Length: 216
Ligand SMILES: Nc1ncnc2c1ncn2[C@@H]1O[C@H](COP(=O)(O)OP(=O)(O)OP(=O)(O)O)[C@@H](O)[C@H]1O
Ligand SMILES: Cc1cn([C@H]2C[C@H](O)[C@@H](COP(=O)(O)O)O2)c(=O)[nH]c1=O
Image 1 (cartoon, rainbow, N blue to C red):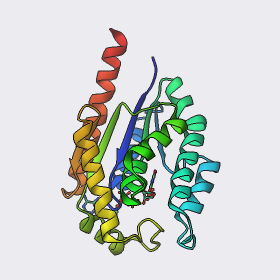
Image 2 (image 1 turned 30 degrees about the horizontal axis):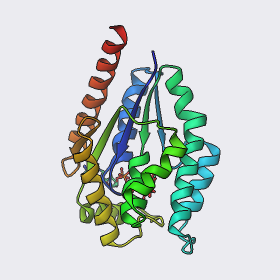
Image 3 (image 1 turned 90 degrees about the horizontal axis):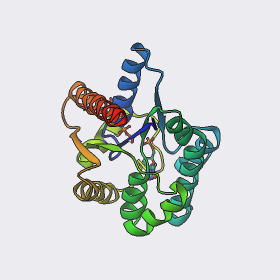
Image 4 (image 1 turned 180 degrees about the horizontal axis):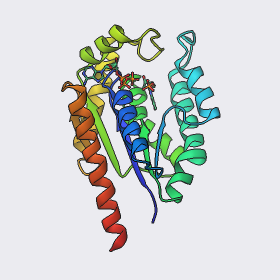
C-alpha cells in the first residue's frame, strides 16, 4: 500500500515545530518506525544548505523570485531524496510545511501571485499533493509575539513586516476555505497541549482511514 502524506502549515510562531516534535516523540515511544517526520525547507543535506541561504538575515539583496525558486528547488530535492521514497515504502510522512507555504509566503506575502507560485511549484512536485494538511492558525500579532519572546535568532522571514505576515495568514485562510477536503484548521491560540491532542487525533484518524481504504 502506498504511504500517507500529511503536511503541517501555519504562520510563523503558530507552534508547528512544537506540536510536531511532541507528536514525533509520542510515535517514537510507541516504536512507530513507519512514521517519518521532516521539514521544509530542509530534510536533507542539499535542502538544508538551501535553507541556510534563504533564511540568512544577511541576504537582504535576495530577489523575491529567486527566493521562490530556491524554496521550490529545496522542495524538489526533498521529494526525491526523502518524501517519495518513504511514501513508496508505505510510510506515513509528516512534513513541516510544503507548497501551501510557498503560495502563502511568496505568492501572497511577497506579492508574486498565488497562482503563479502554485504553477511554478507543479514543476518541482510533479503534482505530489498532501493527503491531509493540518493548518495551525494564529493571528499574526500573536505568532510574532511568541517568536520575539522565545527565539534568540530571528530569521529573514520572521523579521518581515506585520503587513507581510497578515497577507500570509489571509492567504492560508483562503487556501483552507478553497480546499476543505484536504485542509483542516486547528486554532493555535488554544493551550499547546490541546493543539497537540487535536493534531494527534487528526493524524491517527487519517492513518486508520488510509488503512481501511487499503484493505477494501
Ligand atoms: N499553543 C501555544 N500557546 C502558547 N505558546 C505556544 C503555543 N504553541 C507554541 N508556542 C510557543 O511559541 C513559540 C513558537 O513556536 P514554534 O517554534 O513551535 O512555532 P512555529 O510554528 O514552528 O514557528 P516557525 O514557523 O516560525 O518556525 C515557541 O516558544 C513555543 O513554545
Ligand atoms: C517551505 C517554505 C517556508 N517559508 C518560510 C516560512 C518560515 O518563515 C521559514 C521556514 O522556517 P520554519 O521556522 O522552519 O517554519 O520559511 C516560505 O516562505 N516559503 C516556503 O515554501
